[in-house]
Amino acid sequence: MYNQKVLEAFAHPQNVGEIENPDGEGTVGNATCGDIMRITLRIENDVIKDAKFQTFGCAAAIATSSTATQMVIGMTVDEALKLTNARVVEELEGLPPQKIHCSVLAEEAIKKAIEDYRAKQQGKNIDKSNVEYV
Amino acid sequence: MKIYADHAASTPCDERVVQAMLPYFTENFGNANSQHFVGRDAAKALADARDTVAEILGCKPNEIYFTSGGTEGDNWALKGVALHKKDKGNHVIISSIEHHAILTPAEWLENNGFKVTRLPVDSTGIVSVKSLEDAIDDQTTIVSVMYANNEVGTIQPIKELARVAHLHGALFHTDCVQAIPYMNIDVKELGVDLLTISGHKFYGPKGAGVLYIRNGVKLDKLICGGGQERSQRAGTVNVPAVVGLATALKLSREELDKNNAHICQLRDHFEKRVESEIPYIRQNGNKQHRIPSIANYSFEFVEGEGILMLLDFNGIAVSSGSACSSGSLDPSHVLLAMGVPIEVSHGSIRFSFGKHNTIEEVDYIVDKLKETISRLREMSPLFDLKKGGTYNV
Image (cartoon, rainbow over all chains, first blue to last red; front, side, top):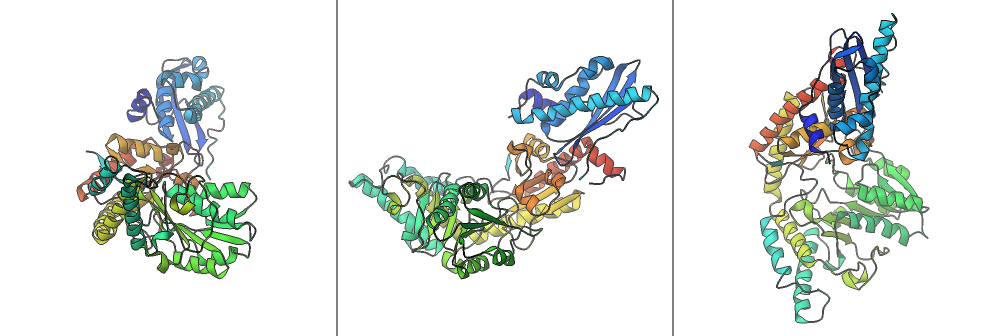
């Protein structure tokens, strides 16, 4: 059901883990739905120097996390904010229709991490997580 | 290495079964309803198969109806009785952990004006007799509870449940698809009115099943057409498949004790290692009342599809009751009915062993499973939270 590129990204995910004292972090998802993603970023002069992820979820969620982190490294935060899940899916050469929703998490986690970064830049710290534990 | 540990999904056809079937594809290919000598050969094979199945199940040959498999038997029993007896009552009772072959026809009945009660189960997946006593009323026409559950293997108190149904004038059907390979089932001793089995679960072919219908029980037909199966189930009988089913059932009875002992040993070894070597797991099912083949575990902080796929990469075939693998987003209805938390149920895997598996294969599965779970947990933010002491699911 998954194409070779997705299988490869799932089997050998890149950027797994977390950055210590990240400049931005974002956690999205819901354990009840079976998907939680946490992304941490290291940002210098508005350029993403490093990105790492931790994901609880299916193979599509893990593959899109890996690919999305690879895509944003080297981008400016403005560029990264424009990254859509459709672009991530395109990079993976497609996902089965019922798995498209899994790719939305990566986009949301990155946006959230950048919002966190910007909030920190403005000297305030916003809520870091909307994870719901049931 | 290629290891198949998904025998609850299907089993390989026994070579002796294949040999028994082969002549009925070519030289004895006839339609069992044809009057000529070619048809008579097929009719003889069909009659012999029916006698074999009847003898094993402890009933008369004219109580055996060949079907296309478990799903047809379940549909026919439930809808057939409910529709036939709709003037007597419109209440149907099933358990909440039935296979979809019962759940979905029950929903269909519900959408067509019937009242359906789904009996709850305890945390090990057992239906209480008391819950049936409480639910049954004079409108109840049929009660259907599976003998052994396909996800966790729990065995139900069928005899007692059937007795309660009969006390209230209802018929009792049991989906025996998962139980039949491992249990000496006698329909009279069990006291059921209808019973479904499927050939490919006991090393027989796919596309062949049996619905036992006790003489005197009336139900509507599901498939209308010609006069096959005493005009109750139309369609040219799949003679090779039926011959295969009967042969496989005979073999499974003859080798029952030997196979059960072997499979039990494999499962016990598997469970012992999993439970001592992998932390944060939950065994799903009942350790006393269960068929020997199934071990079902939830691995916390990870999702089933990832486990399934990494095991698959290592040549291990198992099954996940979890959301994503089946394409639907709903977690297993069986585990939820047993009270397994949703987020834990997402990480559940069913291992089901068979007569051809070996201890070496089981060890290989556990070794790869350990690696797989550690690897996915390293990726999981939930596991990290757990380590940090803030995990609060």
